Image 1 (cartoon, rainbow, N blue to C red):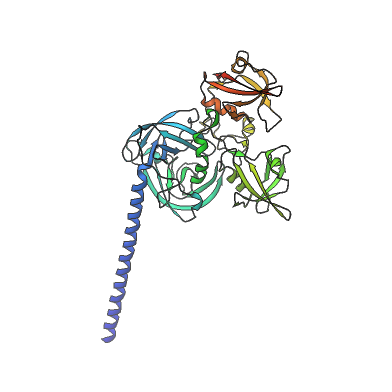
Image 2: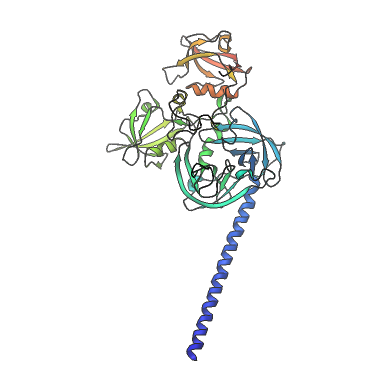
Length: 455
């Protein structure tokens, strides 16, 4: 009997412990649920619905982010109707800057003087770690189309610094990312934007979520913000870049980025790179292979400076160089190529015959000339070989042999410097033109013509 009573008492004690443990577990779950609900309530008002996708306000005066493939005419420029979550308010929004290679557009809501809107701040995405909880907000399958209720999904950061071509240094997440989520934010538990969602790995040629989505990191976007807000010459296209003349061996076995060749007279040569150098870090961030080089060099806009640590034999050398060569605007191909190379063809576009969401709009205006690059790279510009009779430059007095160096204050170093302006600047606009003739620098005004119709 005594043994039975002891056994019963032990069982009751175990049951009580189990009940207490279950109660504690329930309390923990309830607390976690409450925290997620509070986080959702905090970030929800900053979400915007835009076209067939999503976006998020990042300042109280109405600047917001979305994907370029959501607003692919932004470089024209153009405007869009945007609706804010939670209050169903509609705004007209203007495109401020477009980064097709990075799949980002910066827009701005038209607000009344002094008006403010809800926003979410950008996080330090370098602090994001694998295993962090993240919350994503979006408009999958346009489910919010009739109202203003976005879809919220909760998940985990599954990888950081993932190189995915134009998604240079992206964050991999397992929150549900489906068509319509594009341009929407992912948040950390502080309610800060860690990245803008834009891509997932499709399964069996379908576009639905597979548990591997990609967000463009907040720090990369922050690096581009000032350039997106103010491009020289009136252009809205922002270019990524590569260090001119620096060829990386992607098959090398060494840990780092092995320099295969350095072109004479290039940025890489001027900076001091040599064939056989092994780049071990950029801006203090370690490089484990050549693809990591391309990932990091794409996290700043063209013309930015990088600090390279290079192993040269037994020596360690510090080199500073700029990503001075503009890359192609699109997302196609893993390793970027220059804009000049992309214009020459040679790479199959997987969207051939379909709508290309990263193709730049056609130019609106024209200067009316043809020419070739000036061999003096530092002076830059185009040596004019022909001016169109009666065209913009001809009327301004330019002639064959002149070296066109600046338009509207923009230093002309590549064809993209002109073409990106002509997309956004309307015909009839008067621009300042600077050129060199016989060693003398001359500045005149020219009125842009309408671009010829595409054949």
